[in-house]
Image (cartoon, rainbow over all chains, first blue to last red; front, side, top):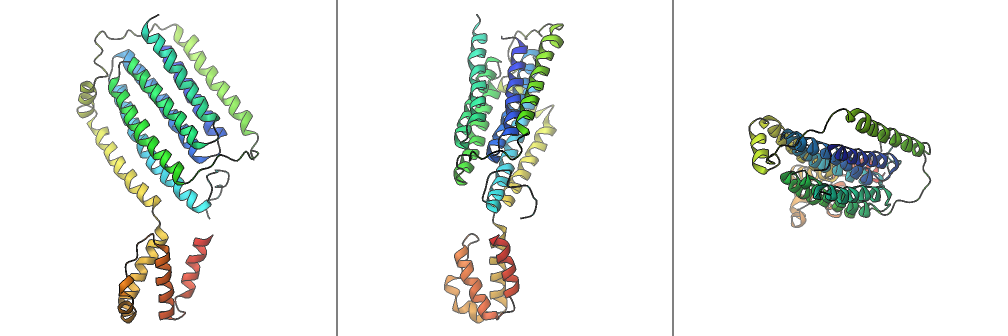
Length: 100
Length: 234
């Protein structure tokens, strides 16, 4: 197998790209997808450690993280729909106050 | 060169390329397609790590369910390309570049200096860690409580998503309308019993019913109606 460090480096690069995307993107759906990318980068480290240490716990954790990501997707997209209904825009700069 | 290293280079490059493309695209739909590419590449990497169950779940849940939901919302909201407007907070761009540099430097430091002293852990001889049987055994014996808590979380997310996405305003008006029509104005209900069915999302029907209500009840209910309509119109 490829060395463990390679997988960790790839995960760090993917996580960094996700962070940069969240910071520079202004479309709320694009920011949402960058958060999904960060979750996947962390999952890669879990699976790599689990495989190299021969312990199944890391893969169970990945399973839980995927479930939480699915729940987050449902609620987050509901919030995005409500936001678009109220603001008529997906730009996060428009949504800077709590009241309408 | 062993096959796993070759596969790592291929799919790792595909993952990084698709991730960069996702951030660079301005159209959210293209970003979504690039993100699906990242998910597929990661699933292939999980296969090289001898975790076929997680790879299958990655394809089914992420590339299947979640991305279909995202693409559905993108098309529902008719999200156009981001306008190339000037950033209001210009200082965020150098901040992003600086933070990315720090993060990469930190990871590189940990991987070269910090991890050099330690040898790589030796993979076990029999690769049955990632198989469905071992994952299921772990999930339903030792980690049963997190599994059940996750199911409660899914239920809460279901209720929360439905609550967030429905149109509460119009449903409230329709219910009030039905109650008033049934109790206070039986003649009106008898006259208009033909089109009594008001679906929650049907604003035209509810609007006509509201108008009839106001005519029947005089001006008493008018201020409240105006208030609601103003709130909705904003």
